[in-house]
Amino acid sequence: MSHTKNKPGSPRFRVGDKVRVKLGVIDPDFSDIPLGGWLGTVKEVEQADDEITYDIKWDKRTLNGMHPIYRKRCERDGLELQSMWLGEEDIEPDDGSPIPIEQPTQIKTLPLSEKDQDDRVRMALGLTHDDPLPDVSPETLMTYFRYLAANLMFPFAIFYWAESGPFSSKKVTVQISRLVDPVDHEFDEGYGLFCIGRDQDEEIEIPLDEIEPKKKDPNDRLISDYSYWFHNWS
Image (cartoon, rainbow, N blue to C red; front, top):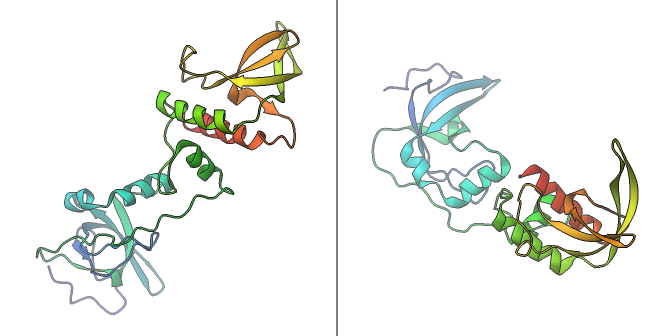
């Protein structure tokens, strides 16, 4: 298919054209991921002022040849894996000649940050910054239990809403003494991890995601991070 008769400033490629990413082109989101040799079909064209961009749907060969780290990052960041927008200067016609898919030579995984809540959850689960957060499961809950058991400071006081009548509850202070080991507990991932508290003279089990440590308690961020993950990845 010829692409040589376009007027200056008009798109060089049309919807349905098969194209190839030029060697040396780098992913616009990840500076350590080269795109050279990726093949696909133009599915949309946009032109704004003098800039022309193309939404390219990758072929099966390209999808199979993508580096696993790239797949992880797309899942982590909510990016589209099947296609990508690229500029006209980044692509050329796919003439059918065989060309290898460029692979990363040095993956640059960012260090985990204590300031980022997702990264703090990754620390608890033994992951890297490139890993997407996993769903709640017996395995991930056990990993999180081991992390919290090693890092929470016991005992500590929390606020807890306890039933005070058929249609009422009251906010009470409870001393938390320990976590319940999932191995010794009837496991239910729908409720997550439990802790043991003392309400007056009685020991009670409370779901960890329902407790609220007092202000400035060093355990507060650990429990908040767990609750954030448990509620959003269940």
